[in-house]
Length: 403
Length: 208
Image (cartoon, chains in turn cyan, purple):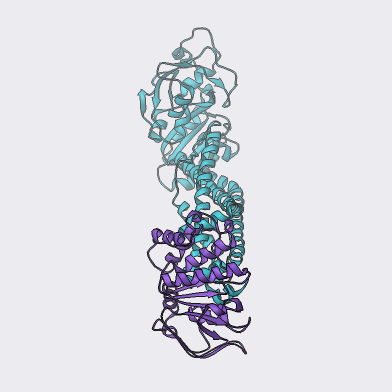
C-alpha cells in the first residue's frame, strides 16, 4: 500500500471517467507532438537541402516555384535559360560556385537531373556502389531512388517526359546505371543524376542508332539550355549586387532559397499555429475535465478522506494523494499522447514519402516533448489543486458523524 | 488511561459538550450514554484527537493531547486509537484486506499482511478478505470495521453507536465483539450510544 497504489485503486474504480480524461489529454498532447515533429523535420530537411545555396538563377516566373523546383525538387520548373547566359553568370566575380541543373524528365516519379559532379559533392554524396557518371547516358541513383525502383549498377531504364509519372517515354534512349549513392538525408537521395548532356541528348529528335557524342557535337549553341544555376556567393556583398544583376539580364530571374522558404513557412505557419492552438484547447479541456472529475470525486470521497484522517493520515498526506492521482492521470495521458503523436507522424510520413515529399518520421524525439510532459503534469497539478485543498481542509469529526 | 478535566466544546455559540471530570483506567470498558445531540460523538472525537476542544485538558495514555502538533496528533491517533464509526466508512475501492493494510500504512506502521489476516481470521472473515465492501452484509462490514480499528493494536478503542439498527441478538453480538477485541489487545474500550439495551452490560458508565 502506498499513495500510488491507492490513487490507482481510485482511478480503476471509475474506469469511464478515467478513460475520458485520458483520451482528452492524449489527443491534445498527440496533436501538439505531431505538429512539433512534422514542422521541425520539414524545416530541418528544407534547411539541409538549401544549405550552401545562396541564390538560384532560372527562367522568369514565380521565384517560389523556381526554388521549389530547383532546390527542393517539388514543383515543376519555370522554364529554361540559355547555357551561354548561365556560363557568363558563373564567371561573375561575385560567384564562388555555380552548379547547373537540367530538369524535365523523371523515372517512376524520381526526377532525372542533368548536372555536374559538384552537385553530388555539394550534398556530401559518394557512391555506395559503382562510380559517378563520365559519359552521356550514364546515370547515378540516389539511395532512396535506387531502393524504390530496385535499379542497381548495370541496370538500364528509360526516362519519361515530365516530372510526374505517366509522361511520354523517351523510348529508344535508355540510361545505364553506373552508380548508386549512399544515403545523405538530403534531396539527393530522391534524385536520378547524370550529365547535362544526357538530358540534351534525350530531347533531340532521334535518328536510329545514333551515337550520343555525334548528336551532341552537332547541337547548336542556341539549343544548349539548362533549367537553373545554383549559386554560392563569393562574399556577403554579393547578396546586394548579384540578384539585381541577374534580374537585369532579361532572360533570367534570381531567387533566394532562404527568403522563399521563410515566405513559405510564414504561409504554412498560419495553419500550423491554428493546429497548435487547437491542441492547446484540447489540453485545457482535458485539464478542466480532470478538475471536474476530481472535484466530484472528492465530494463522493469526503467520507473516505475523513476515514483516512481517522486512521492517522495527516492533511498533507491526503493532499499529496489527490495531487498524485491528478498528476498520474495527466502523465499517463501524456505518455499515450506522445505515442499517438509519433505514430501519426510515422503514418503521415509514410504516406508523404509515397508522393516524393518524404522526410517525416515518428522514430525521432525532440527535446520539446519533455516540455509537453511537463505541461501535462502541470495541467494535472493545477486541476488537482482545488480538490486537494478541499481534502486538506476536511473537518473529520463532523464528516464522520454525517450519514 | 483517560483523564478529562473541565472539558467543553462549542460550535459557535452552541455548547455541544461539557464534562467536568472523568477518569478511566487501562483495560476498562466504558459506556457513554446520552440522547442524540448530547455530545457523545463529540466526546469520542476529542478523545481520539479528531477534534481539539474549546476548553479543558484531555490526557490519553499519559499524553496531553493539546501538547501534540497537528501531524504528531495524527500519528498518535493512527498508532494508539482505533475507531469504529457509526457509518463504518470502509473504503469502497479497496478490498477487505487492503482496508486493513491501509490502516497500517496511514498510521505510519510497517505493512503486515500476516497481522491483517490474523485479525480477519479471528473475526471469522478469512474467506472474505478479497471481497469489496459493497459485497459484504452489514454484519460482515461491521466486523471489518472492528478489524480495521484493532489491526494496529490500539490502546484506546472507540465505537460510535455500534448497535443502532441491530436487532437484540445482533446487538449483544456486536458489543461482545468489541469487548473481546478490546481485551485481545489490552485496549481501553469506550462505546457511545443512546441504546438502553446495552446499559446493563457495562459496569462503567457516564451520562452526558
